[in-house]
Length: 118
Image (cartoon, rainbow, N blue to C red; front, side, top):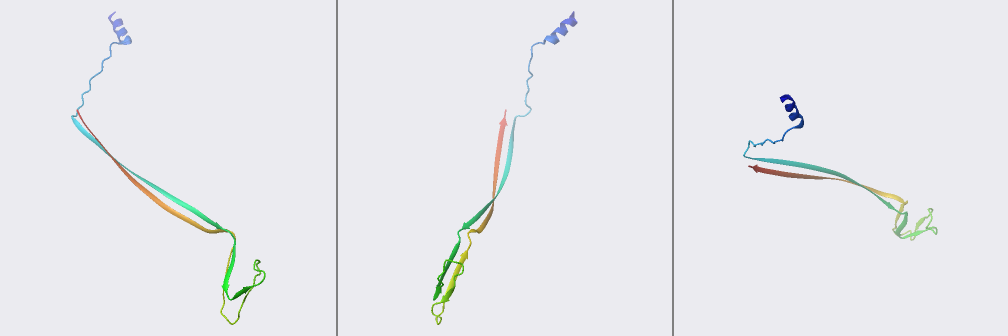
């Protein structure tokens, strides 16, 4: 009968009690240092477009009658004097490509300290 009562007590269970834990230290501290480095590389690709250009300028120069066409001819107005002629021709489209690359580096340090005692 005692065995049945003991088995019933084990199955049903009795009151639960918690054990007290006593720390083995009186004081202490904890410190942590975290260092983070972030590197960003950025490339900016820029394209410059322009329109068609056909211009001329000069001194002591006379153009032919067809100054709008591609067969324009120039002659010195006074052949005994010096002359100067500048012709600029550029088709429409891409004029220039600019690629800029830069690197940005950021360093961050975090220091934490915990002090405890009982």
